[in-house]
Image (cartoon, rainbow, N blue to C red; front, side, top):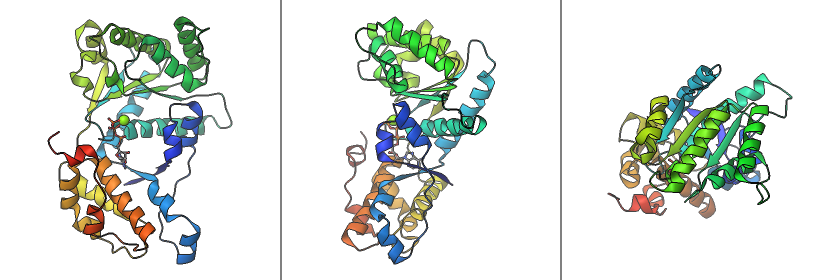
Length: 322
Ligand SMILES: Nc1ncnc2c1ncn2[C@@H]1O[C@H](COP(=O)(O)OP(=O)(O)OP(=O)(O)O)[C@@H](O)[C@H]1O
Ligand SMILES: [Mg+2]
């Protein structure tokens, strides 16, 4: 159930640049094996638990499968390409899911074109708060490493982005944090138009991601109906207490590198973990990795109910019903 990729916190921070994205796509799998005491001392147990091992949850699998299917279907389309909308509450794994899709596509592209360095198969941008069309165009340019100084007007920036993406054979564009645009403001509508212009100019599959997009004004009105008609929705949710949750806890447990950890401890606590985190995967991951880091720091090398409860929850999980 575990995907062989770790997300390094540093690289993840810079995913919105071509270099950061490339570093993310080049990370080698880390195999969580229990090492001898000496080997373990040489390696940093802290570093291991600080890294995130991505689990192939149903959200990840559906996003990757649907995304890859669309990329294939769109390959020969000259217009009206189809896309995906991944939408759901904060912390439900949307960004992780689309970056895994991006990773899968990037690795496939590299394997198909070995030794070719001028391809940029994936572009990842986030919509800044209160974005203007120029800001969104600049985000694309920034990813590609293109200049965006005042000398360049928005048309220059858009043209060079489309030109570079076409030359670099960009096949997948991930647009995250889309809830930052609101179509009820003038800028919001213009930003949506800018994105639409990009999606027509760049021969790529577009993935739109954010909180509550399916209910937002983005999909209403004439402009919205056009997007809604061509995009498949993948909703994301907190996990209910059930098989998938239990599998998730057990997979995360297997990634632990602690010497006195009694296997099964977390699995036995899976109901408590669900209650504590409200089924949010981000809060679960934080709890478990936090307790593991504490275990290394204090030298106890184990996790107990008490040590889990000692890790503070995030604000959302702390206040149920919000
Ligand atoms: N498939 C996964 N495997 C392991 N951990 C995951 C996975 N998906 C999400 N997480 C954990 O949940 C956290 C939140 O996930 P992510 O950032 O993808 O959520 P999001 O829906 O994009 O949230 P936001 O709306 O706030 O941007 C991650 O930092 C990670 O710790
Ligand atoms: Mg996100």
